[in-house]
Image 1 (tube, rainbow, N blue to C red):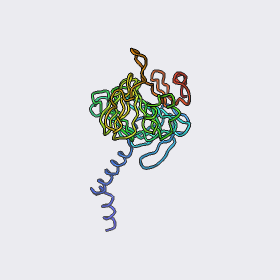
Image 2 (tube, helix red, strand yellow; image 1 turned 90 degrees about the vertical axis):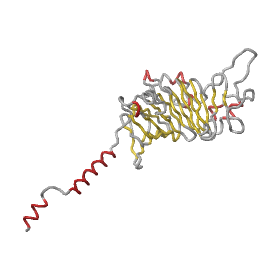
Image 3 (tube, rainbow, N blue to C red; image 1 turned 120 degrees about the vertical axis):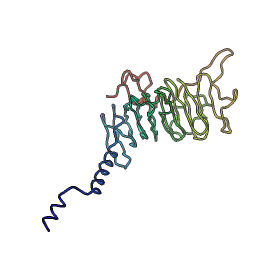
Image 4 (tube, rainbow, N blue to C red; image 1 turned 60 degrees about the vertical axis):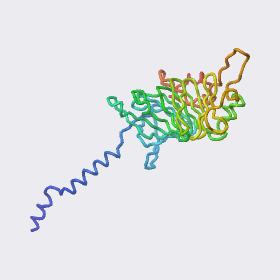
Length: 293
C-alpha cells in the first residue's frame, strides 16, 4: 500500500494545482509592467515611487513604468524620453506621475499618453502619440485643468500663492494682479495646445500663454495682441476696453502683449541639440548654451 501511494503522488498533478500555477504566472507577468520611458539626463537627486509605495533612486538609464511618480528634488533636474519620442524635462522640486501609456507603431488608434503634474514645473516636446489621428490621445493633467496637444512644445508651472511673485514684477500692474494668487501657468512655444477644464476648451498657439486658478473658471490667456480674461463674475472673457487688453500706445500703433513671465523658471528643451535642464536664474539665451551632462 505504501508503494502504491508513492507511485500515485508522483504522477500527473491535479488540475487544480495546474490552474493555480498558471494563475500565478499570469499575475507575475502582469506585475512586471513593460517600461515606457527612460531617463536620458539627470542632475542631483532623482527618485521614483512605485504604486505600492516603494521608493528607489534613479539615474541616467533608469526605466519608468505607468503608475510611477518621478521626482526631482531641490537643485536637481531630470529629462525622460518615452518610446514614442516624447520628451519631458522636470525642474527642481517637481513631481510627475505617469498615469497611462500605450504606443505601438502599427496601432495608432490605441495610442495613449497621460501624465499628471503634481508639483513644480516641466517642459514637454510631444512625440508620435497625439499626432497620428487621435488628438485626444495625449493628456497632461493638473489640479485646474488638462492640456491636450496639436503637435507641440509647451511648458507647465504650478505656483503656490506668493511662490512666483519675483517672476511677475515685469508685468503691467493690471495683469499682475490677475495672476498673483497662485495657480497654473502654461506656455506654448511651438505648435498649439488645448487647455480643457469645466469651463470649456481653450486653444492656444505659439507664442501664447495662460494662467488658470480654478477648474471651474475659464483661464486667462495672453494672446499676441490681446488678453482674454474671465470677467469679474467668472463667466467668460472680459469685454474689450475693460483693462484686460495690452497697454495702448499712440493711435495707429499696435502694441504687443507681455511675454511669458516664467520662462526662466522652467526647463528648456532643444531637441536638435539634446539640451535639457533648469534655467536657474539664467536668461533663456544664456541657458540655451548649457548642456546637462
